Length: 405
Image (cartoon, rainbow, N blue to C red; front, side, top):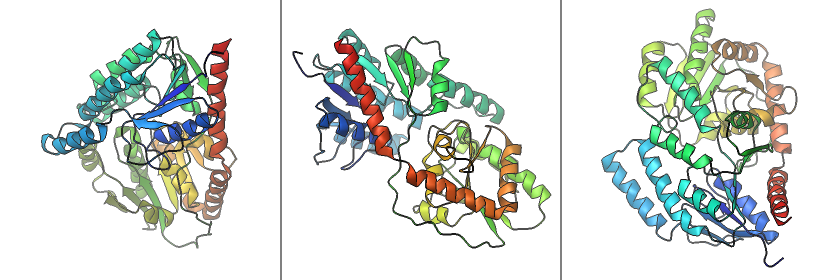
């Protein structure tokens, strides 16, 4: 062999001293393992502080921290819609990332798909492109969100329905050789796209960095507190949870059941929810909360009604505190919490009746619900993220070996 094969790892998110934000967390740990095997070229991110990582890493541009700061500062005055602002940043990242594509790279391993220029250059050089998505396939999400927006009477675009961003994705994904899916539902959304790329399933989860917490059995009280936590847009499914809550309140005359909604709600959706559910009993909107864990660990049930959600972390956060979790089959976290019977309740998407049934079951079967929370915590505690990182690294090394043959 004339030279050592190398892998370039790329993530649109930013790096932290010991990990990374979002999917950069996966990039960080995979880069660390690749470096130990002598296979890493470097890890490229949007921005990086003034610290060293145990492997070669750098921002996409030496000026990225500064122009991102300026862009965010300007946007406070311009108030550009989030979906447009995001797309501008993605284009800038793609333009600059293209310069990092060099002939000594054999594989481009990316957690971002909106990179038409970078991918085109890599393809021209014969570099294999392996993409690991953070979410379901973009056109799949577009279909679900568009259907939901029609139901809700919402007409303004958002990141998943903004036509220029969808076009950039579709122009980019055609260059990808392999889509490596880490959740079963994400895998299913990619195998039916009709694209020529290979689609691989390699189940695994990015475990949040939790503070240690020893499980404690909560004493049963008269009040039963249900919690929902999200920055809420239509695909988070709050509208179905509130419809379920309306049905529950019509059946339950006592005031023991309480719903706590945490997080900012999209303005267009809030208008719909206020019109339809304004007079619901026993619902408390907390807005954005600094210390989510304190709010979470005191609750009796966490409901995650997302229509599509590759994680979500909140389900794992609830499990960490032994809180029983109800989540939809389109949530990636269901794969982990569902590895043992009784680790969570998994329900269909867009099903208010199923949400209602799950809440009432948890309310009327307190001890069984507590056991579900305990089982969920055991599954999370026993899960070894490092084994998942090793599997991904092994897969990449195997791909390098195949290219040598």
